[in-house]
Image (cartoon, rainbow, N blue to C red):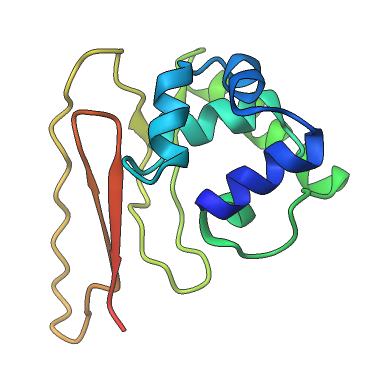
Length: 150
């Protein structure tokens, strides 16, 4: 992911300081990411996506697909998010689905308030043949690690 963040900065002709300012991130936080000291957190990814809406998050996080999201995909995603927000009475919800054989929670989870820790929802699979394929650990310093079975 580090290479793709550097590629975004390079394509836009931005220094690390300019890029940090554009996405609303502390310069020191970006410096730690670029040096490899910290991994980018979900918050950093969301800040990049918030500033550069056209960036494909699958490409940014996993290197999958193209760098730029097609216009039709962006419109469909925005429309879907708008409808989901209306259904939730204006409350922002995070929604996860199964995609490309990556298993993620299917239920909608209310977005936690800043500086709060939410208790994770545990869902047990009764099918004994099911096997975990990916685990993500989020740390209090806004970094995370992703582990995938091979």
